[in-house]
Length: 159
Image 1: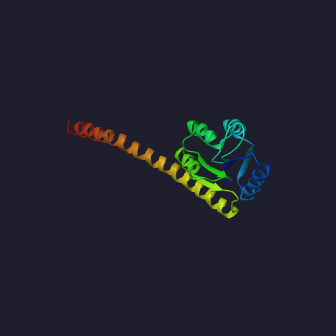
Image 2: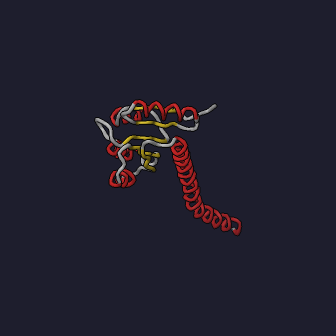
Image 3: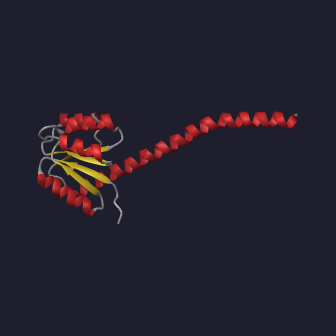
């Protein structure tokens, strides 16, 4: 079976990484993992990920800093933050910096699945919207050309 997309799971807790990786692999996602933001940033540079799931509090580079780095490289990637130490300020900062969602530990795997599927749906909708916007621009550019060709053809036929 083909994969449904690529996900990067970033968490300093190995058991969380393995649990999410196993679960998402069973859902037919291609999953890579990293233990902190620095390692994740290196992996991100080599792979095309659709979704990133990152812990907030990690050594070397925390999840918010990692999110900022990723957003400077790719504004469209879907980014989900997870944390075992939820607070309103961190959640607001994560969303303000461009996180799609914020999940608190311990999490329900069905909830994680739903949020990831929603993230993929939103990503798909964004891509379709870009395609439609491209068609709109093509139409806007081509209409004056067709009008000009019509005027030229009319003048040639009258001659």
